[in-house]
Image 1 (cartoon, rainbow, N blue to C red):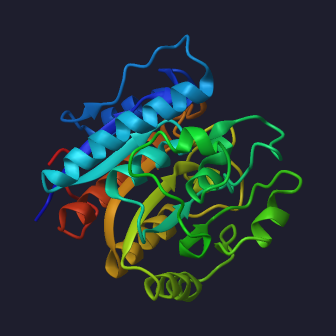
Image 2 (image 1 turned 180 degrees about the horizontal axis):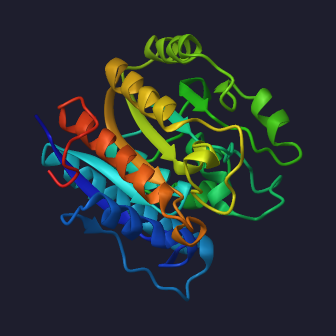
Length: 284
Protein backbone atom coordinates (compact mmCIF):
# COMPACT_ATOMS: atom_id res chain seq x y z
CA UNK A 1 0.00 0.00 0.00
CA UNK A 2 1.37 3.41 -1.00
CA UNK A 3 1.37 6.57 1.02
CA UNK A 4 -0.27 9.68 -0.42
CA UNK A 5 1.68 12.91 -0.64
CA UNK A 6 -0.49 16.01 -0.77
CA UNK A 7 1.12 18.84 -2.72
CA UNK A 8 -0.51 22.28 -2.54
CA UNK A 9 -0.06 24.83 -5.33
CA UNK A 10 -1.93 27.85 -3.90
CA UNK A 11 -1.70 30.10 -6.95
CA UNK A 12 -3.98 31.66 -9.55
CA UNK A 13 -2.27 33.13 -12.61
CA UNK A 14 0.97 32.60 -10.71
CA UNK A 15 -0.11 34.81 -7.79
CA UNK A 16 -0.26 33.24 -4.35
CA UNK A 17 -3.52 33.17 -2.39
CA UNK A 18 -5.59 34.98 -5.03
CA UNK A 19 -9.09 33.75 -6.03
CA UNK A 20 -8.68 30.04 -6.84
CA UNK A 21 -5.25 30.23 -5.26
CA UNK A 22 -7.09 30.06 -1.94
CA UNK A 23 -8.69 26.78 -2.95
CA UNK A 24 -6.00 24.33 -1.83
CA UNK A 25 -6.05 25.66 1.73
CA UNK A 26 -9.84 25.50 1.76
CA UNK A 27 -9.90 21.89 0.62
CA UNK A 28 -7.16 20.85 3.01
CA UNK A 29 -9.07 22.40 5.89
CA UNK A 30 -12.36 20.77 4.85
CA UNK A 31 -10.62 17.40 4.57
CA UNK A 32 -8.88 17.77 7.91
CA UNK A 33 -5.51 17.23 6.24
CA UNK A 34 -2.54 18.48 8.22
CA UNK A 35 0.39 16.88 6.39
CA UNK A 36 1.23 18.42 3.01
CA UNK A 37 3.91 20.34 1.18
CA UNK A 38 3.51 23.66 -0.59
CA UNK A 39 5.08 24.75 -3.87
CA UNK A 40 6.62 28.21 -3.98
CA UNK A 41 7.16 31.02 -3.29
CA UNK A 42 7.21 32.76 -6.66
CA UNK A 43 8.29 36.31 -7.44
CA UNK A 44 4.97 38.18 -7.94
CA UNK A 45 6.73 40.85 -10.00
CA UNK A 46 7.63 38.38 -12.76
CA UNK A 47 5.39 38.25 -15.85
CA UNK A 48 2.40 35.89 -15.62
CA UNK A 49 3.76 33.29 -18.02
CA UNK A 50 7.13 33.30 -16.25
CA UNK A 51 5.36 32.72 -12.93
CA UNK A 52 3.22 29.88 -14.27
CA UNK A 53 6.15 28.03 -15.80
CA UNK A 54 8.36 28.54 -12.76
CA UNK A 55 5.60 26.93 -10.71
CA UNK A 56 5.53 24.06 -13.22
CA UNK A 57 9.25 23.49 -12.80
CA UNK A 58 9.01 23.51 -9.01
CA UNK A 59 5.95 21.28 -8.96
CA UNK A 60 7.66 18.82 -11.30
CA UNK A 61 10.45 18.40 -8.77
CA UNK A 62 7.97 17.81 -5.95
CA UNK A 63 6.01 15.22 -7.93
CA UNK A 64 9.18 13.45 -9.05
CA UNK A 65 10.44 13.30 -5.46
CA UNK A 66 7.14 11.88 -4.23
CA UNK A 67 7.23 9.10 -6.81
CA UNK A 68 10.88 8.37 -6.06
CA UNK A 69 9.89 7.95 -2.41
CA UNK A 70 7.15 5.48 -3.37
CA UNK A 71 4.32 7.93 -2.63
CA UNK A 72 1.27 8.78 -4.71
CA UNK A 73 1.31 12.50 -5.64
CA UNK A 74 -2.06 14.22 -5.17
CA UNK A 75 -1.84 17.84 -6.24
CA UNK A 76 -4.27 20.50 -5.00
CA UNK A 77 -3.94 23.51 -7.27
CA UNK A 78 -5.68 26.76 -8.01
CA UNK A 79 -5.29 26.50 -11.77
CA UNK A 80 -5.46 23.76 -14.37
CA UNK A 81 -2.12 24.68 -15.92
CA UNK A 82 -0.57 23.02 -12.87
CA UNK A 83 -0.93 19.91 -15.06
CA UNK A 84 2.36 20.82 -16.74
CA UNK A 85 4.38 20.34 -13.58
CA UNK A 86 2.46 17.26 -12.47
CA UNK A 87 2.89 15.48 -15.80
CA UNK A 88 6.53 16.50 -16.10
CA UNK A 89 7.21 15.13 -12.64
CA UNK A 90 5.70 11.72 -13.35
CA UNK A 91 7.06 11.46 -16.91
CA UNK A 92 5.07 12.33 -20.02
CA UNK A 93 6.29 9.47 -22.18
CA UNK A 94 3.38 7.25 -23.22
CA UNK A 95 1.13 8.84 -20.63
CA UNK A 96 -2.65 9.02 -20.91
CA UNK A 97 -4.86 11.74 -19.43
CA UNK A 98 -8.37 11.61 -17.99
CA UNK A 99 -9.43 15.27 -17.81
CA UNK A 100 -12.67 16.03 -15.95
CA UNK A 101 -13.73 19.64 -16.37
CA UNK A 102 -16.68 21.89 -17.26
CA UNK A 103 -14.40 23.69 -19.72
CA UNK A 104 -12.18 22.40 -22.53
CA UNK A 105 -9.01 24.27 -21.43
CA UNK A 106 -7.90 23.80 -25.03
CA UNK A 107 -7.29 27.40 -26.12
CA UNK A 108 -4.19 28.27 -28.11
CA UNK A 109 -2.51 31.66 -27.62
CA UNK A 110 -3.47 32.69 -31.15
CA UNK A 111 -7.14 31.81 -30.60
CA UNK A 112 -7.63 32.82 -26.98
CA UNK A 113 -10.23 35.49 -26.28
CA UNK A 114 -9.53 35.59 -22.54
CA UNK A 115 -5.73 35.59 -22.58
CA UNK A 116 -5.86 33.13 -19.67
CA UNK A 117 -3.10 30.54 -19.45
CA UNK A 118 -5.43 28.59 -17.19
CA UNK A 119 -7.73 28.10 -20.21
CA UNK A 120 -4.78 26.70 -22.18
CA UNK A 121 -3.84 23.85 -19.82
CA UNK A 122 -4.90 20.93 -21.99
CA UNK A 123 -3.61 22.58 -25.17
CA UNK A 124 -0.22 23.13 -23.54
CA UNK A 125 -0.19 19.56 -22.29
CA UNK A 126 -0.73 18.27 -25.83
CA UNK A 127 2.05 20.46 -27.19
CA UNK A 128 0.32 23.58 -28.49
CA UNK A 129 1.54 27.03 -27.47
CA UNK A 130 4.38 28.56 -25.46
CA UNK A 131 6.93 26.18 -27.01
CA UNK A 132 10.04 27.87 -25.60
CA UNK A 133 8.71 28.00 -22.04
CA UNK A 134 7.40 24.44 -22.24
CA UNK A 135 10.94 23.44 -23.06
CA UNK A 136 12.16 24.80 -19.73
CA UNK A 137 10.17 22.22 -17.74
CA UNK A 138 12.33 19.08 -17.38
CA UNK A 139 10.41 15.91 -18.19
CA UNK A 140 7.60 17.69 -20.03
CA UNK A 141 6.78 16.38 -23.50
CA UNK A 142 3.58 16.64 -25.56
CA UNK A 143 0.85 14.14 -24.75
CA UNK A 144 -0.70 12.55 -27.82
CA UNK A 145 -4.22 13.97 -28.26
CA UNK A 146 -5.49 10.44 -28.84
CA UNK A 147 -4.32 9.62 -25.30
CA UNK A 148 -6.77 12.11 -23.75
CA UNK A 149 -10.35 11.55 -22.59
CA UNK A 150 -12.19 14.77 -21.75
CA UNK A 151 -15.19 14.27 -19.48
CA UNK A 152 -17.92 16.73 -18.51
CA UNK A 153 -17.02 19.73 -20.69
CA UNK A 154 -20.09 21.77 -21.54
CA UNK A 155 -19.32 25.48 -21.19
CA UNK A 156 -17.82 26.56 -24.50
CA UNK A 157 -16.85 29.97 -25.81
CA UNK A 158 -17.13 30.65 -29.57
CA UNK A 159 -14.80 28.39 -31.53
CA UNK A 160 -13.82 26.14 -28.64
CA UNK A 161 -16.03 23.20 -29.59
CA UNK A 162 -14.88 23.42 -33.22
CA UNK A 163 -11.26 23.18 -32.13
CA UNK A 164 -11.99 20.12 -30.00
CA UNK A 165 -13.87 18.46 -32.84
CA UNK A 166 -10.80 18.91 -35.05
CA UNK A 167 -8.62 17.18 -32.46
CA UNK A 168 -8.25 13.47 -31.65
CA UNK A 169 -9.37 13.95 -28.04
CA UNK A 170 -12.20 11.62 -26.99
CA UNK A 171 -15.03 13.69 -25.51
CA UNK A 172 -17.97 12.91 -23.24
CA UNK A 173 -19.76 16.24 -22.92
CA UNK A 174 -21.82 17.42 -19.97
CA UNK A 175 -23.67 14.72 -18.07
CA UNK A 176 -25.54 13.18 -21.00
CA UNK A 177 -23.34 10.10 -21.24
CA UNK A 178 -23.91 6.74 -19.61
CA UNK A 179 -21.64 4.64 -17.46
CA UNK A 180 -21.23 2.39 -20.48
CA UNK A 181 -20.06 5.36 -22.56
CA UNK A 182 -17.48 6.25 -19.95
CA UNK A 183 -16.23 2.70 -19.60
CA UNK A 184 -15.96 2.39 -23.39
CA UNK A 185 -13.92 5.60 -23.64
CA UNK A 186 -11.59 4.50 -20.85
CA UNK A 187 -11.22 1.03 -22.32
CA UNK A 188 -10.27 2.60 -25.64
CA UNK A 189 -7.60 4.63 -23.87
CA UNK A 190 -6.40 1.55 -22.00
CA UNK A 191 -5.71 -0.07 -25.38
CA UNK A 192 -3.18 2.71 -25.96
CA UNK A 193 -1.56 3.12 -22.53
CA UNK A 194 -1.63 1.73 -19.02
CA UNK A 195 -0.31 4.86 -17.26
CA UNK A 196 -2.54 7.85 -16.67
CA UNK A 197 -2.74 11.28 -15.07
CA UNK A 198 -6.14 12.02 -13.52
CA UNK A 199 -7.17 15.68 -13.60
CA UNK A 200 -10.30 16.79 -11.71
CA UNK A 201 -11.47 20.38 -12.01
CA UNK A 202 -14.20 20.68 -9.37
CA UNK A 203 -16.46 22.64 -11.71
CA UNK A 204 -17.02 19.37 -13.58
CA UNK A 205 -19.64 18.95 -10.85
CA UNK A 206 -23.11 20.35 -11.33
CA UNK A 207 -23.84 23.46 -9.22
CA UNK A 208 -26.50 21.45 -7.41
CA UNK A 209 -23.55 19.84 -5.60
CA UNK A 210 -22.19 23.26 -4.66
CA UNK A 211 -20.47 26.11 -6.46
CA UNK A 212 -16.86 25.31 -7.28
CA UNK A 213 -15.96 28.70 -8.77
CA UNK A 214 -17.43 31.70 -10.57
CA UNK A 215 -17.34 29.76 -13.86
CA UNK A 216 -19.49 26.85 -12.70
CA UNK A 217 -22.13 25.82 -15.25
CA UNK A 218 -25.25 23.69 -15.19
CA UNK A 219 -25.44 20.27 -16.75
CA UNK A 220 -22.51 18.82 -14.82
CA UNK A 221 -21.84 15.57 -13.03
CA UNK A 222 -23.38 14.60 -9.73
CA UNK A 223 -21.02 13.69 -6.91
CA UNK A 224 -22.08 10.07 -7.35
CA UNK A 225 -21.16 10.19 -11.05
CA UNK A 226 -17.81 11.80 -10.31
CA UNK A 227 -16.89 9.28 -7.64
CA UNK A 228 -17.89 6.45 -10.00
CA UNK A 229 -15.72 7.97 -12.75
CA UNK A 230 -12.75 8.19 -10.38
CA UNK A 231 -13.20 4.54 -9.42
CA UNK A 232 -13.45 3.53 -13.09
CA UNK A 233 -10.16 5.27 -13.87
CA UNK A 234 -8.32 3.60 -10.99
CA UNK A 235 -9.77 0.20 -11.88
CA UNK A 236 -8.30 0.37 -15.40
CA UNK A 237 -5.03 2.24 -15.10
CA UNK A 238 -1.86 2.77 -13.19
CA UNK A 239 -2.76 6.29 -12.06
CA UNK A 240 0.67 7.82 -11.55
CA UNK A 241 -0.57 11.19 -10.25
CA UNK A 242 -3.80 13.10 -9.76
CA UNK A 243 -4.86 16.70 -9.28
CA UNK A 244 -7.90 18.50 -7.90
CA UNK A 245 -8.14 22.07 -9.11
CA UNK A 246 -10.17 25.26 -9.47
CA UNK A 247 -11.90 25.53 -6.11
CA UNK A 248 -12.70 29.16 -5.30
CA UNK A 249 -13.79 29.53 -1.66
CA UNK A 250 -15.40 32.93 -2.20
CA UNK A 251 -17.80 31.44 -4.73
CA UNK A 252 -18.76 28.63 -2.33
CA UNK A 253 -21.03 30.76 -0.19
CA UNK A 254 -22.77 27.91 1.61
CA UNK A 255 -19.70 25.69 1.96
CA UNK A 256 -21.27 22.76 0.15
CA UNK A 257 -18.49 22.49 -2.43
CA UNK A 258 -15.86 22.39 0.29
CA UNK A 259 -17.61 19.36 1.75
CA UNK A 260 -18.03 17.74 -1.66
CA UNK A 261 -14.43 18.53 -2.58
CA UNK A 262 -13.26 16.90 0.64
CA UNK A 263 -15.16 13.75 -0.35
CA UNK A 264 -13.49 13.79 -3.75
CA UNK A 265 -10.07 14.32 -2.17
CA UNK A 266 -10.66 11.40 0.23
CA UNK A 267 -11.77 9.14 -2.63
CA UNK A 268 -8.72 9.90 -4.77
CA UNK A 269 -6.42 9.50 -1.77
CA UNK A 270 -7.99 6.17 -0.86
CA UNK A 271 -7.61 4.83 -4.38
CA UNK A 272 -4.10 6.27 -4.66
CA UNK A 273 -3.04 4.56 -1.45
CA UNK A 274 -4.43 1.28 -2.69
CA UNK A 275 -7.29 1.00 -0.20
CA UNK A 276 -9.87 1.45 -2.97
CA UNK A 277 -12.60 3.25 -1.01
CA UNK A 278 -13.63 6.84 -0.58
CA UNK A 279 -13.30 6.90 3.18
CA UNK A 280 -9.55 6.93 3.55
CA UNK A 281 -7.52 9.43 5.55
CA UNK A 282 -6.09 11.94 3.04
CA UNK A 283 -3.13 12.62 5.28
CA UNK A 284 -1.74 9.09 5.12
